[in-house]
Image 1 (cartoon, rainbow, N blue to C red):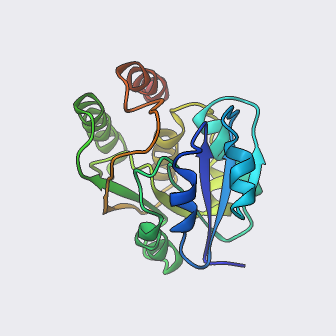
Image 2 (cartoon, rainbow, N blue to C red; image 1 turned 45 degrees about the vertical axis):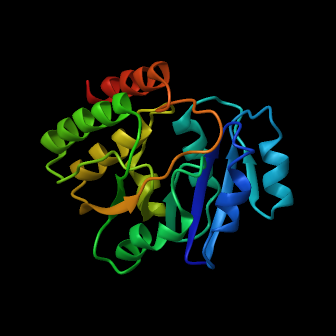
Length: 212
């Protein structure tokens, strides 16, 4: 058993995969969940030594849930695989969980990003803070929790509402939810979500459905 399994949802991230996997810390085992890539991301990840899971059901939550089911370590991390997050920061979110100081830790991004994405994220974080009571400033694409506890939450969203539902259900269950600052870097390759207005709108729509 390693320190933690790391679920990496992937949809056409061939350009970013080598950098992300090469920076994975010792003991953090990457699980690349190929969510229908057409650029050979899955095959490349296998050649680079990652465990690859194929999830034909499209959706960010579907990919994350497939990775959760495939994980073996007690602690599980999730992070985007577009090189906007440095895997060397994983200990910042994983160690408080391993130490028992928190049940769910989110990485609060610090750095530049598209204005529309930053505004949407801020609004969602404020609403999440109001509803959950957790003092959060970011939805947190890098996060960590215990695998069995996550499974017990019974998450049902399979689209972009998955990260929001996780925090809401965790807060309702009495979990200690915290955040730590992490660096946010320019992504590699074409953005499907926050880099485009349409993608951001789709993510906000899915998260708003969870809030309702």
